Length: 355
Image (tube, rainbow, N blue to C red; front, side, top):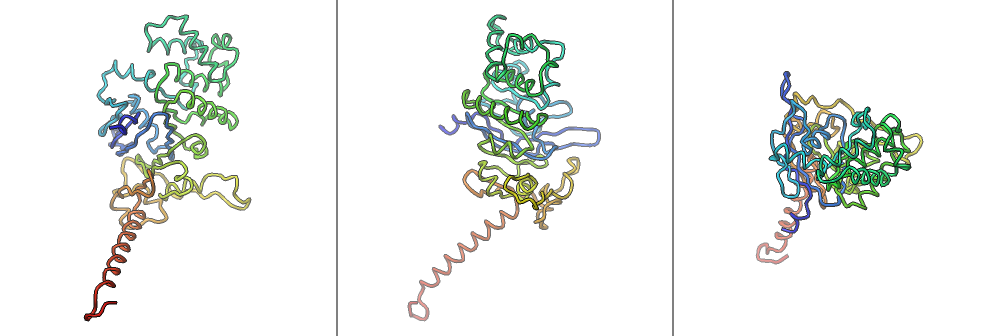
């Protein structure tokens, strides 16, 4: 019972499909994970792997023709998928907030920053006065590192730099003190220096507020800097999950290894070249029968093309869905059984004489 109380979010066998004229696109194909209070989980993978769609499912923001077709999403013991429209509106912002990739498409260009922050707060707290909301908005802007807040409150989005607009989006997401923040590639459109500032800001705010964070990105360097654990997605499935150190230093799935090989390293020799993952991503309209990564995998076997691999525990809280791991575990068990049988044979008497 105590373990259940520690779970902020539980996603079980979530399936999301888009029903298009060309057919059903299975964007998310049955993923499961959980998140504790105050925990930061990274979700990594190539574009089109289903990272954003699973986040939109939690927020109830899936656009037509997208639909959750299976599984469950539980937040603090409540079934999110059964929420009414009013319950979902209350859930967004007050319980869960989201930061999007491009703040300029999320901020209204004809309203001041102050008006938008105040509106976001009063939409979820009907009793708060306008004066109190403005005070809270200025406090949040100061918290995210924006100076001269009284002047900034009266400015419009185009008067802010890209980094400052992203700080405003973080302030807007946190203004109602959510317990879970979903950050969908919040640093992708920013230069490296501003990226580092935003990451430092999010780490600092996470420590202060103790909120859980789902950090969606294709940048493994960002994951190493901010996350406690990682889920690696490919073609709508989680192919590997584990603590961040295990994923980086002991990757188990060929796709995870490929992502790491294609990432620049500071300690690499000057003559070393980045190794890309060969092939092209899966056609989600016609996914393969077996492992979706099989057509691109250098270790592909016949069974990989025909059957989906089960998850195998490769360490503490570390699992991978790969037939290589399944067979290696099976070989270990066979060897253990054989050795135990050999030991038993040596203890038996032969022709009445003990060995």
